[in-house]
Length: 296
Image (cartoon, rainbow, N blue to C red):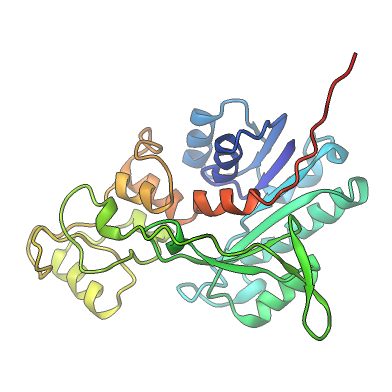
């Protein structure tokens, strides 16, 4: 396969293909965050970095050879935790650049496969716009079926589709994965929790509150943060803490040491903004791979 990964981040798509023993010929990564590129090249030094997606027309790529496009276009303007400017926002509007690239490749290779992901709290209006632009409606999968984290996401793909509804719409036909029943307590390196699942980790995990009284207050009043207690009764103590690097990796389905070359906060930024590895493997497992046989 020849792959383009847009908004590549920490390279979850590349790791998923590796874990599935799918041979990759060329893997092009569009990413601008320096430590995301550092982590990707650490694990897969052969990845070709092409830079900012806004400059895609300048990339040195044989477009007709591309078999797969991955896109995790920014969700900051769509998420309930963001500014809700929608697809008109400066970051989330980059979805349309992905569409430009996809349409360009489709003209040269109509069989190209793609996977687009975005946040489950995106407004229905924006989900509809994205679905019509892609020509397919998404499936909604929560990472909590495969990890100890609640992470509700939409996934659009032409890997497996079906027609549905009164208007015979094309929809993503990826079934939900079987629940592995992994709880937060199962992945903690120490301490206790009073929740079955972690709240969805966010890019903002890179900036943990240091004031433990405020941290505990936000945990109880807002709930959109994760803390670990040192006592089983899970009441406030001076020893409460945020999730460590190993635990954050586990919540996204990565090996404990995957982010070892990064600081805890840099790793948190990438993991909070990334894809859940076992969910991507589940989706890709429905891909019909055509073996390219070489003959003398």
